[in-house]
Amino acid sequence: MKRFIDRLFPEISPTKLLSEHAQYCLNAGELVPKILKDYFNAKEILEYSKKIDEYESKADEIKTKLREVYTKLRWSYFDRIDALEIVHNQDSIIDAVDDFVKVMTMNRVENCPNEIIEEIEKMGNYVYEVIKYMKLTVDELRTVVESDFSPNEVEKEDNLTFDVEKDESSTDKLGIEIGKLLYAQKSIMNPVDVIFLNSIVVLMMKIADRAENVVERIRMIIR
Image (cartoon, rainbow, N blue to C red; front, side, top):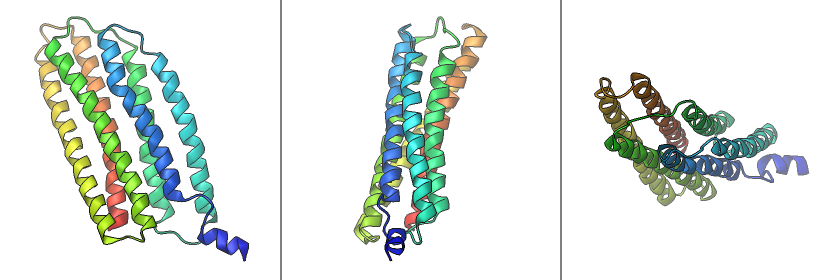
């Protein structure tokens, strides 16, 4: 009987684990604006990679726990595949931030106009905001599940997902605008630097995209 009860009501809630995992994504995302600011101020940024590795290690532990919980569960509000898809995209956020900082250590850009630097730093802030909203969405999923899908809580979740999509759309738009500004400098800046900075912008767009994937999967769950 105890094993049957454990399968229905696990000791650790899957949504709690998802929320804890999302927190490490948020911790990594918080570093993006700081990394950009330090980079453009000619400061060392490789140390950030060590922090991200720590977050990744902790997130992996949570992912393992989540898989164990779903192995034992007899019943859940949403499928194991949905939970693992969310975790996979959240993992991708941490991985992409790690790629972001490591790529930035490979080249030191010279003679970049302040206008472009400001726009790139603005994009870093946007990326962080998208991840913050994603974390709120994951937390609200937990509330929705614990409320037995209360209509009021579902409506709150819908409002959150709209906000995330709006910010992610802003990130895409800004990324394209920065790309245009960069390539307009191809006869002035070192072309290698232009391509390098554009690759950094693309990485940030990828991070925001992964956060949006999490939101989309949660939307599918609550509907």
